[in-house]
Amino acid sequence: ESHLTSHIEHTDRSRIFDSSPYSWVQNHRHKKTMKLTIATALLLAANASAFTIGFKPASSVRLETSLEAKKVSFREDSRRALVAGINKVANAVRVTLGPKGRNVVLERNYGAPEIVNDGVTIAREISLRDPEENVGARLIQEVAAKSDSKAGDGTTTSTIMTQALVNYGMRAVTAGINPVALNKGIRKAARVIADEVTAIASPVTGIEDLKNIATIASGSIDMGRIIAQAADKVGDNGSTVVEESQTLVDEIEFTEGLTLDRGYISPYFVKDQERQLAELINPLILVTDAKIDNVNDIVPLLEQLVKSKDPLLIIAEDVTGEALSALVVNKMRGVLDVVAIKAPGFGNRRREYTQDIAIATGASFVAEELGITLDSVTLDMLGTADRVVIAKEQTTIVTDGKQQEAIDARIAQLRREQAAAETDYDSEKCQERIASLGGGIARIKVGAATETELKDKKLRYEDALNSVNSARELGIVPGGGSCLAYLQYAIKDKILAACADEDERQGAMIMIKAMGAPAMQVADNAGIEGAVVLAKIQAATEEHGHGWGWDAATFEYCDLMERGVIDPAKVTINAIENSASVAGLVLTTECLVTEIPISLSEEEKQQLFDQQNMSAGMGPGIQ
Image (cartoon, rainbow, N blue to C red; front, side, top):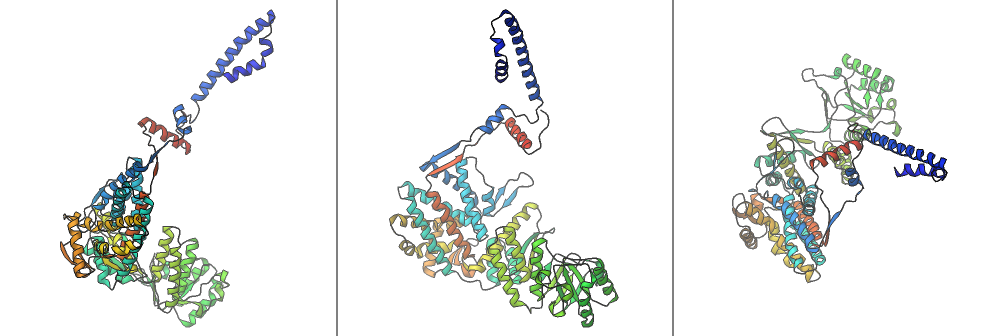
């Protein structure tokens, strides 16, 4: 209105201020006209706003233009909030430790609640209302996640160790000890303990050790037996996959050799009509990334095969047209024993898979980039295998072992690629290729009566598999927390000697105190006083030597290594290192910055939802 008025006044200024009688009448009439014009403009503006699509109310505009405030806490207040969040998560996780550990029920927005015994799964589900405490919860979730990603197990032990370190450390900081020196002392102690665990670890000697590891990690003798059987069958290079089954019992299937998720291109290649399979014994194998559609490209090779009478497997991007027709006709007439399949994978992965097949079979990889064309292929450029079984959607190549050195070199290269992989997906694909080249794949099919039980069993299987792999890597130590309980007094002087001053020694003492927490928690979950059990474990190890401890399943003090109560050394080391990392950072915290939560009414939530829809191009229409 002001803009419109100033515009009118500017254009008619000379007439409005004219003092003649005639001008006064003219000015009077013009003011009436001006008022009418302003009123009309306001009316039009109001009507226009009423029909504007996506019009935003004044309250929503204020929300968008205002800056979000933050809450800043200092010193004791900041640390106290972090510790409160850490304790809430740790108290929920710690009840699952040991053979007498309990389960935790997780509510789901959709579907049935989930009952789990896995530390990292429980920790991830917890989100606290207080934003400052929630930061502490996120920190301890990071500890559990790191332990899960590095060793695949030991997440509960890591969480308990972190809680103990933080609570002992807070008392020391409150007493006036320098938190930076405490952090250094904790880290130095962690390095000494990790080195000592590595030194006292025993290597895995056979299937019985694998069975014991899997049994402890899964909490089930049957699961331990199945996992040990799978791990022993596929070897170090093999892979074990956990899948869901429609039955009530757990089953295990083994796939030996190279398995490709591709079947025969034409059903006319089938030899066994009853089973719908094509089987080739001692075949020659052509591996190429080319698309074969011209029969003249492969005629020279086929002529050589007719003379040698060798079966032929063709692995190509595709076989179509007259080339496919020629192969089918010669197959049906009995002139050639030939089967063609498409190369597995897509894009760049297809090329990698075909190169794997070429290396495993000893074939020359036929590609125009390498200067090799199809019409120049000779018999000595083809690969070999003991047997190839081709089904409708799967092909299994059983290699003859002649290319073992080349396969080992390829596996070593794939392991380097896996270590450098940027995503979990790339890492998994490398592991699949290693497994198919190396020792085959074991598939554990998990059965259960309900969906809730099925999810819990799958998590237990995955934990146990990870524990077995960790044990193979760095060996095994006595379980039940007795390894750390033994080291708590055995290397105390060695840990303290690594510290530079008294404050660092105080930090090391905090780590030494925390080393007894896992054994005490195992006892607490079994209904026994933890401090009493810890003292008896240390007395038993002092009398009988390293390896003795408390078996929570039978309530006996015995040689845990003989009893089969063992843990992977890698799991124990990761628990020490990860807990020391986060606990030291929490103790050195002096300021905490968090968001101030905004409570919205139901109407405001709906308004915000509508705005988000409109910004995404899904406006509600004319308002």
